[in-house]
Amino acid sequence: MDTAYLIETIIKVVVVLLIFSALAGIGTYFERKVLAFMQRRLGPMNVGPFGLLQVAADGIKLFTKEDIIPTNVVAKVFKLAPVITAATAFMAAAAIPFLPEFTLFGYTVHPIVADINIGILYILGIMGVGLYGPLLGGMASANKFSLLSAARGAAVFISYEVVTGLSILAPIMMVGSLSLIDFNNYQAGGVGDWIIWSQPVAFVLFWIAAFAETGRTPFHLIANDHEIIDGFGTEYSGMRWGLFFIGEYANMFFISFVIPLIFLGGYGDGSLLGALGLLGKMAFFFFFFLWTRAAWPDVRPDQLMWLCWKVLMPLAVVNIVITGLVMMF
Amino acid sequence: MKNEQFNNRDVSENGYFLVDIPDYPTDGWGKFTRVVKRTFKGELFVGLWVVLREMIKFDIHTVQYPQEKMPIGPRYRAVHEMKRLWESGTERCIGCGLCEKICISNCIQMDTKIDENSRKEVSEYTINLGRCIFCGYCAEVCPELAITHGGRYENGSEQREHFVLYEDMLTPIDAFKAGKQLEFEGFGSITPHEDERVKKTPLSY
Image (cartoon, rainbow over all chains, first blue to last red; front, side):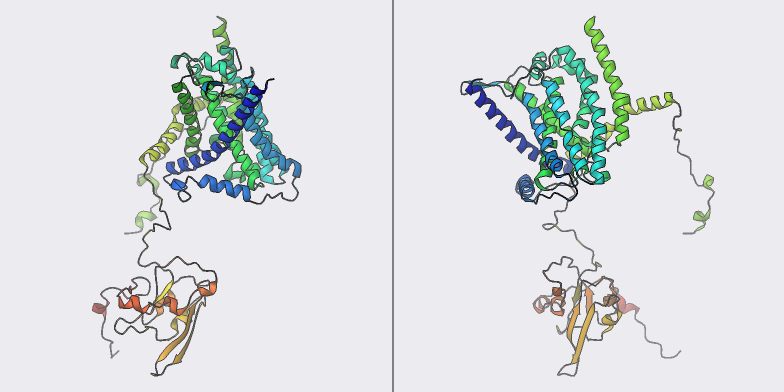
């Protein structure tokens, strides 16, 4: 392995880490503002212009708050759990091409940390590992609500992960590769080539499963505030809780990148317009996460499992069979 | 308004009707069709449209409190005020002690003495706002309209002993001279046009 490649990779890792840690903070600002506007409020207004520095204030608060390890918790697991959530969220970003490749000072940059040939499998797998954060944190917390949240997390996890895998199988069969760059090149011909036109069912299923994956509002039952306080986060304080938060928002951003890359043409032919298009699509999907939080109620865990096992999974299987038959003949 | 229309419980005459709600499906096919109907009805998108509409209209109802304040009613019962006589500017309070007597939470403490003009004068007067329930009895019972409720609802202090001394409640003399003393229209005050309703005390029964 030559040194230039090593340095380049390290720089890319650092850039991705810094940008998305910052974005996670700004994401909370956008969430508060969008929710406020939809509920005819103003949201944060006092720290900085339009409340923009609220993110910094929250960051200072989280960093300087006392790190409490309560009595009776399993301390080692309790301390480890938030790290798992945040780390896996950022690890999943390694296989996502955020922009088309571009030339900077005569040096061609590939804005993907590692173009591995099992990209989607890796992303889904690492995001699945991310569930160990809520699960272990909830079980180690010595708190009934955290334990409930951990149990819900496990139940929800096996439900939506089946849908995620099966729904994405049909596009994978069409493209014949697991790399997101191959997915993008498959759809590079323009809007007519987007996989959403040939796989609308898979698109909707994957989108629904993305809500369960990130734990956003219609399926926000792992940490449902009005039922089980903050679920697995109840006993956490300071930066450990902040790591859960960063993980959740980074996950939202990465899923918002993955959905357009798989179904909506990604960055297209790699021009500047295509790159802006990918960012625009990502912004829409991120906005949609906030939008549904303002509009929709939460479902119960049994309703989510009913939905996943009895509706979405059969649909996904039928979709795969039909796709297979069409491809065969 | 008579009560008879409410006493009549024969619902068939009052325009009541049963809402047409279909029964819950019992068999599998019924449940299935209900799920399909609900899925394609698009009610979720109605919710999405409603919140997006409110965001686009941007009709914000927030009152940014320390900078902006809602107007409060003239009858609002906040921290007490002690008024001055319009003619002379002296204190209206005659030290009768009725407010101290009637106070149901025992928060008014007063002490009086005879001053050099042989008039009764208030020497000490405190209201413990930590105990006060703002019932307004003191303002109602005051024969001189001396103690009333004001509109000052923002109280902050490092010690609760700062709540509240006679001097703080009394209309400041400079504000009084500038004509800034507001007559309280609320609880305990005289009603408008009270003069016209005054009758002579009947002397013979």
